[in-house]
Amino acid sequence: MRLRKNHLIVPALLLAAAWSAPVAARAQTFTIPLGPKDAYLHIAASDSAVPATPIALAGLGAVPGQSLLMQGVGDMDNGPSGDTILSLIGIFSGSPVILGPELLHRIPDAIDAGPEFISSPTASGGQPTDVPEDFRITSAIQANAIIEIPAGATHLFVGNHDGKWADNSDPDGDLGVQLTVVATWKSVGGALAGTAGLPTLTGVGLGLGGDPVTLSLTSAKSAAASWLFIGFSAANAPFKGGVLVPSPDLVLGPFPTSGAGALVLPGTWPVGIPGLVSLWFQSWIQDPAGPKGFAASNGVSCLTP
Image (cartoon, rainbow, N blue to C red; front, side, top):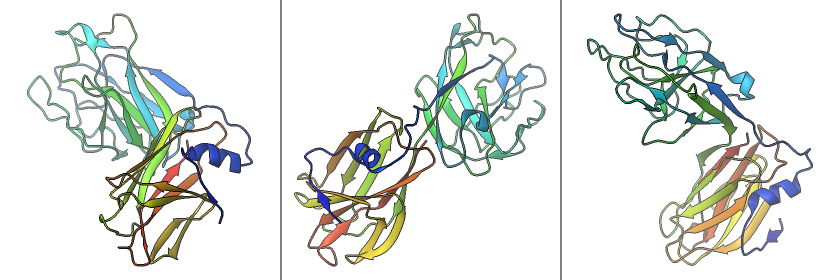
């Protein structure tokens, strides 16, 4: 393995240079129009709403394991507040089936994903509406959501969060949701303890050409030399008393950690990385507290969009 020494890391560019693949276009953003009465929640018998339309994931070029960046657009009039309301929720399903509004579990093939969202009871009669599988997309305090598409999902339902539907309207017809397939980052374990405990590596970025990407290391030994291993597959091989998670296709460094044992490695994701490819990252840190003079972070995987 040949070590490369840089003052500033741009890991995605190095990956692109190592990859003989055709240039891929930036992921497309789809804007799906929504109606102000679109709902998959239970509706009181005295109220009225319209069943949310299932969005086929195949039409977005999205598959389980990838993630969706979801963001509401426009707004609606919920009656008392005027045309200012934007509060969208979503639920993944293994089919396009949606049942009647009198039922609580209207999406029979719902699949749990994302942080749990607890919906409000109906304005009429205070009847329960909450189902455990859905999540918030957009609200007054949340601009967007990035949710991994769960195994088995084929469709996404997007609805408004409300307790009363009959007085909803959209005077300017601008309500909708924007959907973009983006990268999925996951910690896959494999850390090896050192002076400051278990070092932690995290990755952040949409995985779209031209967008920023950042790898951040924390809880490492202060003022220590570190190396970043990048692989096109997982090795999970014995190494220095621990586990080398990525195959060592690229080894970058040394990079000094800060006095707090941290390191931030920024870069730009290039156009050219194919979709549905798993990349693997791990930091190794020179540390006498490690079993063979090294500590290691957890491995991180990134599934490209």
